[in-house]
Amino acid sequence: FLICSQMYNSCLLELMSNSNEEMIYWKISPGEVGDDWENQKSRGLVGIHFFDFDLTDLSEDELRNKISVEYGVEEVAKRANTFGQVRNFLNIKEGDIIVANSGKSKILGIGRVVGPYKFRKGEKYPHTLPVDWYDTTEGTIPKQEGWMVTVIQLKKEEFEELTKQRIKYLL
Image: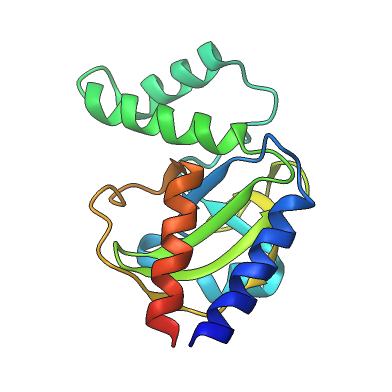
């Protein structure tokens, strides 16, 4: 156990030390409860679906207006939640780390973003980012209460704790 844990941690530390110092960690569900994971993993991307229109070059005001049209004025909480998640997704940059999940207690994979946002018209999850999935071993972790939404930014400490917890469950 100790040797495997040290090797895994060593690989993660090497990956992080060779990366952009401003790297951000994100939790993203590839589909509802991870139902599109195999497709996204095999294609080297992560995708989400909120709307069927391209988000490239939209200002925050334009995004807010499109969301208002989509949900109407009565859905204030839903509009705010959606805006936050879509804005976060669009702010993910090359070098950031993605933790793909299914539900609140399963990690499907971990990867690094390797390019910019791309809209893929006609796909189930058309808003995509290219990802190098460097760890695709699925693992169970303790239940994460905040994982009820699609896109969440993780603190570095949260990411490190998740990888430690995951190692325990993998061995």
